[in-house]
Amino acid sequence: MKKLTIVAAALAALASAGIAVAHGIDGAQSVAAVNATFSATPAAGSSNTHTCTTSTGKTIASTKATYTGTATGSSDLTGPVTIAAQSTINTTDNVGVVNGTLRVGKTEAHFTAVYDHGAIAGTASGHGATPHVQLLGNVSAGFTTTGGFASGKIGGGTSGGSAVELSSGGCAPSKPSHDSTEAEGTVTAVTSTSITVAGLTCTVPAALGATIATRFPVGTRVQIKCSVSGGTNTLVSIKPNGKH
Image (cartoon, rainbow, N blue to C red):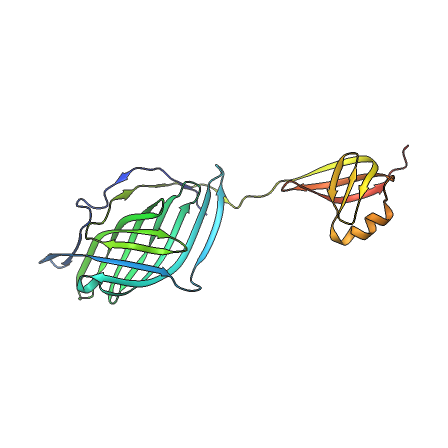
């Protein structure tokens, strides 16, 4: 997955923010302002999210989901709305990008928007319900991957937004470190779940609990080795030590 680097900046999605227009594609014989408001929530079972951590410690969440709801406004933008969206969000800094396809009846538009602290702003382009009519406009909404799109606008005073920069690079799930610790001396405490030797306490795996407590009671001299993962010491080997 590509690394996502976010840079905040001002963005005017179109020269005149908050306007959506529809016009004939053959010679642009007519131009008309259109607008709509919309909202859409996640369709059941449609969401799929993957996360990773960048080399700089930023958590990136990529989500694909389908959102459904209603749109109200100009005739081509009124009715049930379906949005197939993919979001890539730096959840550490709460910025990212959201893009996808918005459909209202026979009207369909592809949009790309910048996400900034719970809101998106960008542009959409596609076609209206009437043949040979092109749609171009600003899009904005409140957005979360779990809640969907709220107070959305196509044209009609759509807000401007931020800007982001995407750069290539590595981004992979973080890997826990695996170190080891060792101790040699007398068992000072032992149960079916832990053992302490020379001040080192290690968790005893469940499969070895009864055996460890029976074979190595308090006072037995041993050598132990433990694996350290996520701050937890887990016993990996133990053997008697006859030194006095």
